[in-house]
Structures are given as C-alpha cells and as structure tokens.
Image: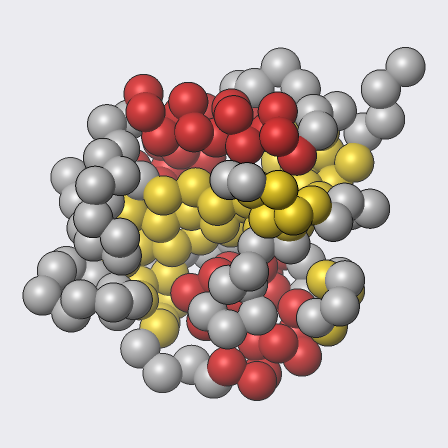
Length: 162
C-alpha cells in the first residue's frame, strides 16, 4: 500500500497569458491520478531572475498529497511542461511554464536531475511568498521554516496579483 505524502511545487510563467498558464498548470497537477487535496496559493507578480529584458512572471505554489516518489512526480511535472509547450533552451529565460518540485515530506534526494529540497527554495522570494500562503510552518530539512525564510529574503520585486 502506497503512503500519501505532502509535496510542494512552485509554478511560474511569463509568456502566452502567464496568469492563464499558471492556472492551467494547477489544473493539470490536480488532475493527476496520484494527487489529492490540492491547495493553491495566491498569484504573485515578480521580476524575472536572470536576464531582465523579458516580461515579469506570474508565480504560485501548490501543495498536495501524493503517492508518487520524487522521481515519479518530477517525471509527471516535466510531462505537463512539455504538454504546455515548455522550451528549456535558455537558462533563466522567458518560459510558458516552469514547474519546480520544491520539497516532499520525508524526502531528501540528491541525484542527477533531481535535488529535493530544491536548491533555490531558501533564496527566492517568488517561491517563498506563494509557499508561505499554503505552508508557512513547514520546516524544510537543513534550511528552516518557510515563514522564517520568507522574512529573510524580503519582498523586493514581488507583489500579490490583484
């Protein structure tokens, strides 16, 4: 029997009606057969990380229960990205959709192509602000609580999307 464990995913888009792409990605994740009890954050507007000559991003986070392993969940997330037209050519470039597995309860993974907790979770306000909406008190192993991390990164360049 598979155990249902909490998992958290960051979502971002800055191309092709980004608000709609983020909502579409959330719907795709919710539709996965091994996902239950999905909870979503508010939507945030943030400046791009890396090259600034691109549109601002819309960001969100979701938390849910899953029976998938981290690798299986990553495979599903990458398939959603491919299905939505994600092109992975430019690092930190514009994108139709970006889905990052942030953390899964009781999972620490460091293998080629997959690191859990996500290595950028503690320093990115566009990840921490949405994550704090749905899971402010969780402790990310070896890093700290989401709320403490959020306070540490500050709110420069990020705002709630009305």
